[in-house]
Image 1 (cartoon, chains in turn green, red):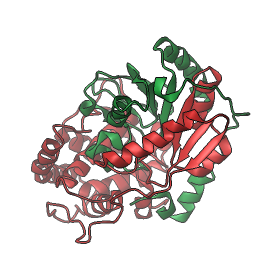
Image 2 (tube, chains in turn brown, yellow):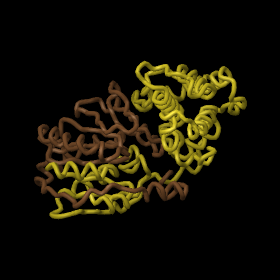
Image 3 (cartoon, helix red, strand yellow):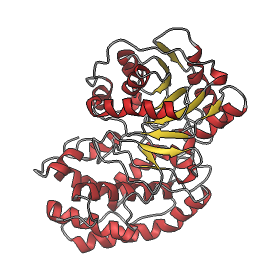
Image 4 (tube, chains in turn green, red):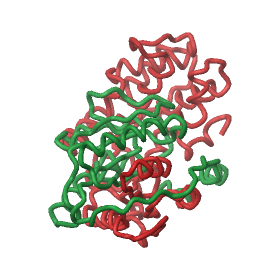
Length: 153
Length: 250
């Protein structure tokens, strides 16, 4: 397994100690009770529908993943070579836990599953991502999304 | 990831997130974070472990019920199945030794085509075991077309042109090289009970195949090229961290 702690030391240090952007004070919005929340997934694994264009390096754009899409056709085109993909090949839920989210909705842990999910490709400079993310918030509100679960890769 | 949480929450959307690198969450301070001790690429822990995955997602979502933050919680358990198969892993196919002469485009193409042909039944079986799922297809090219282009780039380098309309050569190369690696990797995990790790697949692909050998040579060149596109991809988007000891520049 290529866990962070098993990476070659100089590469691990470079990853962990990379310079991070400053985001200022932590914002806080109090959500509805969890069992009433309509929840969307947002992945940064560079996932998209098979028919969508693959991600390109440095782009801050996202792809829409409709909840009705056949998740077996979901494709990963993240530019990085530095994380495991074999888990995703074997089971989409390893990095995009859509079936688990649906089960939690059926169990009543969350209220419901949103009609659309989204995927970015991570490792995008925040200056590129910021305006896109702020616009996405409007889309989420229009979709009546009450909370999002952000899943990295 | 943490940046997205800041922006979305500032715009009024409550967020919760998983973090694979705890230190980044400590510094960025997103509103709600569940730090997990899993491998990069596996934020839910492990494939085909629905109960475990559900626990991870549930703990992450339940952070939404906290009254104030930032919240940074640790998921307590390692991923299941993290122990490698005691019998070790071997590729289902025995390849000839990687091609020696990397100046002959035809020879490289033929060697790649032979690897593709030997892997094809395993790739197909693997796909079938996963109900037709495959990640191959990003570039829209066939394995044979990709073999021809990779052979060309190995020899002609920045003069290779692009075989994909509207895509500059470095992006065409990137999507095709990724597709080829997906093809090999999916063939390598053909056994449904396979507990092969990313590192084992990597050691095989990068150490024992012609594909791995030519991709290392292309990376060695790309680190020093003046071609801006290839140069930008070279450091982190060509060879995985655990295989960079095979390259000149590390």
